[in-house]
Amino acid sequence: MPRSLRPILDVASGNLMLMIALHQDKPCPTNGEIMEWTGVARSRLNAWLDELVVRGILEVQRKGLLPPRRRRLRAVGGSWTGWTARRRSSRGLQ
Image (cartoon, rainbow, N blue to C red; front, side, top):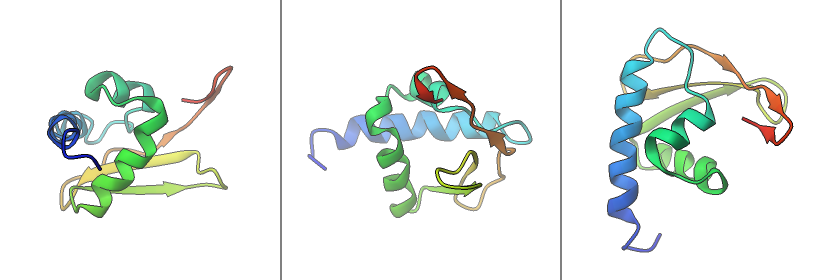
């Protein structure tokens, strides 16, 4: 990742951690909600979430047939959000 993007994405990850804390015992935030809170583009969202997992900041569980339609998140060692089904829209997955 370019060094110039890392501080921006670190701020976005802080926003995501706050969002996850507010969603404990509630449904997992949708991709649209995560994009709204963090400013991360849809085209980059899954790669960014995967990077947070690799960096040891985030844990993600997915279930369902490929592509998985349900997901839950937590900060490493924290409480999980609830499971949320991903719905199809006219533009693809939310």
